[in-house]
Image (cartoon, rainbow, N blue to C red; front, side, top):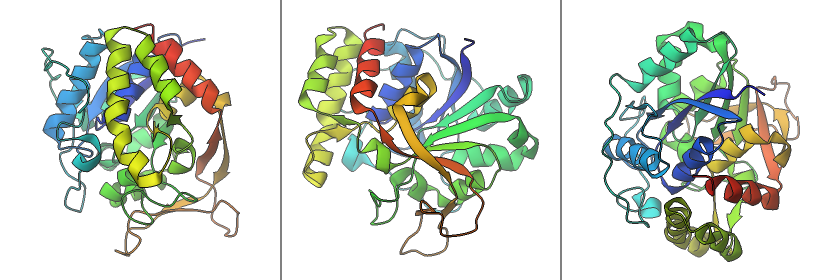
Length: 313
C-alpha cells in the first residue's frame, strides 16, 4: 500500500505531540509532507517550537515544520495553558530544538503542496484550530477540489463542550475558520469529544508507554501524567483522553472507529453557543451530509496500536 501523504496542522499540546509521534512511527501508512503550526493551546511561538521538539524526540529532524497563523480569523486568541501548562508540553523535561523552522508561511506551504501533488492525493490533518486550513482555502479556492480528505480533531455533540458548555476548544478558538472548512465541500472526517473521551489513558495503558523504556515512551508517559490531572479532576474519569492521536490512528486503521455520515454546521453568531458543532446525528433536517462524525472506537485496539508504534521510535 502506498503511504498516504498528509500535512499535520497542529498546536502542540501533549496529545498533539503523541499524534505526531504516531505518524512519524508509521511510514508504511503515512508520509508526512510537513507540519504547519497554528496558535491554539499556546501561542504560535510555542506551538512552532513544540512541534520541532517532538520531531527531534522522534529522531526526525528532516521534517519540515512551518509557522502559520498567530491568531483566529475574527476573534481574540483563547489559549489553554490551564490544561497543557505554560509551555504546552509540560510534563517531560525535553531540550529546546536545534532544528530551525522551515522558511515560509504554513498557509503557503499547504497551498503549494496540494498544488504540487496529483489531485486527491494529499490529506490535511488539523489537530488544532482551523485557522491555517481556512486561510489556505480563502487564499487559493482551487485547492478545495484537490484535497483527498480532511481528518480533524474537533467538536462534540453528545459530550457537549470542553471550553464552554457547548463548544470544544479547537472549534471555539476559531469558529469562523471551522465554518469555512465545513462548508468547503472537501470530504471531512471528524474526531469529536464523543469518540476521543473513549480513548482514556488509564494507569495500565500509561504504564505500557513507560515500559517501552525509550526516551519517546518515557516522555509520552510523562506527558500524559501531567495532562491527565486536569481531566481526571474535571470529569472524574480514570485517565485523560488522548484526543489528537485518534486522527493519526484513523489514517492507519480506520476499522478501529465507527461513525455516521451526517450534516455538521458551526455556530458563529450566538455568544452563548459560539463554536458549537451542530451535528444532525438523528437526521432530523434536510441538510446534506458533509462529514463522517465519529462516535465510537475500539479503545484496546487503539492503545495497542499506539504502544506498538511508539516503541519503534
